[in-house]
Length: 129
Image (cartoon, rainbow, N blue to C red):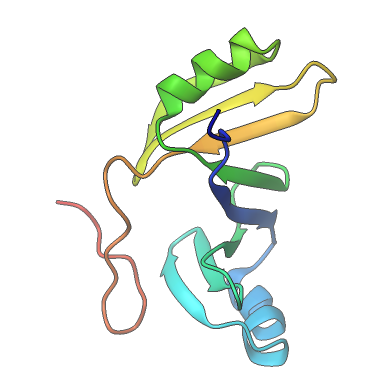
């Protein structure tokens, strides 16, 4: 059986101010900016293609797991004894869902069925028309 989770897509952390967070994580700790938009910024984690996403949105810290297909992963997790908490719902790059395992640990899954974000030379996300 092929494992369900491909990789950690990102570790997402809430911050009060993106500029202050960038001063700490980018300027002082050296993490390269991958993309940025009004409420979030992604930083490169060396030796991996996972991201550290800092955001000002009203949500808790989370680990997002990359899967091939969110709908198929939901079916597999539920069949294994997990529970669906939210989703699936559309995100910019594809689909996302929030589940929990039998011990009530949160599992956030996403796929990139819509493709990765497009950015300009300043790493700002190019908004969809």
